[in-house]
Length: 302
Image (cartoon, rainbow, N blue to C red):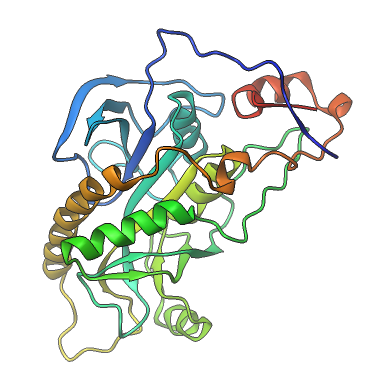
């Protein structure tokens, strides 16, 4: 079924805080140097509460919103995060682009601890997560062959190179459920599949961001080799933490260098992901589902 552009667009209240850019920080990234915080907002969403209040302010001259993925004090495991509420809260603020930062393990010899990766593919090995907004009487199938925004990935990778930061552009991020790390057998199998890095969060964010028509890209911080790697001296927790701290410092510099290079307008397909995605007959969609998804569907009418 086709979807046509609506002649009526909802105009946000003047009292609604706004941000063009969203930053979701993972392990270690709980604040942003250079981010001029102005206020925090605790938003309600039709999908529950986000991981915590969002911090609003300006970053490199752009209105931005920052959210700690795991909550204050890193209290939420990957499986406990309310991903739908996090992305919906960003949408409420008017966010059009999300830069996600997270720690990962390397699955290849050539990707070293301390390197950064800007992946362009995901493999989903999670179980039972709520990874769609569209349920309860309404179905949508968004295109996800290319799961990250090409403009954002280009900007991130180019910023790394300008700063002289070791970066790998492209590659597959395998998203496991966690919170346990892989068994050695799992790790060796994943290696055979040819994936590049492994983490526990980003594919769920990417799916929901696409449904919300928000551009999304990941800056992955490699902290260690997954357990497939046999070393004479096993990596210690202290060593991993040190690498993570160093990588977080790099990530902050990369984000600051990325923002000025972002194009003023979005020319990618991310912004129109729902144009032909909703296939449910309008008359069959319950009023409750329509109300819950009003923000996401406000650009389109059936």
